[in-house]
Length: 389
Image (cartoon, rainbow, N blue to C red):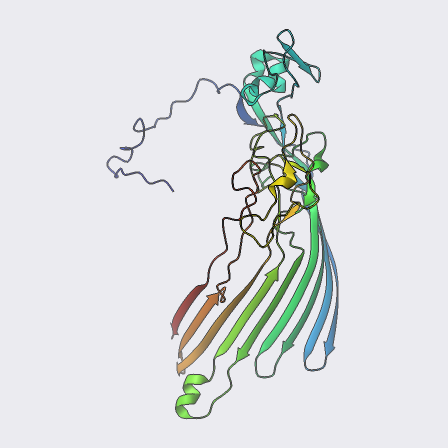
């Protein structure tokens, strides 16, 4: 949120240069500006296929057991792509020239640096006069896929006095090529290797939690005798939700444009598989102390890839911290008259006020790499009183 100190009489008082309207258009786009390609009008529509099978069994004491298999497949989801990438020229210039992939770059010293990224773009190398007008060219392609398979086990019991209890356990896995573009075909990162989309094939983003366990219950208070005790202590309901889950999966990023291909956002975005270039994993165990906040990941397990190359790590291949949480609620409706009632409700989230670590820093180039610096919400309590008439 941006707040200016101006008022309605002079809203642009603190804006640099004063009132920006009417806006003066540039006579031409700046050199090496980013453009969007028109989407492929022959692209297939995204499709989701689902299938499941379930078995239920009633057992004594009013328990209901069920076991279900759930599967789905998403195909033709939109994935971001980039063309006009910078060509990597290895080594140093010979007689003022560097050569690679059939291209020639006129320069001195080191052939490829972040400073000459735009001069190494394909269109600039093919036609320097017109090519200098174009930076990254963004494309959106219908090549994304995701596959989900899950086993769901559950048990439920509904008591005659109104109490209920239930528990369920999910064991699942989701893999695919991350569908990074939004429904307009824009707004998503691109896959890293233009010649190998499956280089970005890996676990699904935050939805791939391998194990999830939930327990829910509602217990009514007994009916007490007596005028005062019956009115004050009867009619309450106590409910609770316990949830435990394994961690989501993270992508380790280099924090640097090691491929020197000029892909936007390629340096350090931990939230998407394809935006951040990924390092090499050089130790079998990438973790430090998974109970620690300062050494969750072992920095020595990773190394920056050689210039002009991609690392060997897959996207979303590192599991973050798991968690468990207990939430509870207490509620009652007081009947005042036939058409009037007062409802009281108290809720507490994270009742135990347990520290819940979030994912660690995944930028290999950061000083806090592998450290957990954020946590989930502490205990939150809220109360509500509602009068209905």
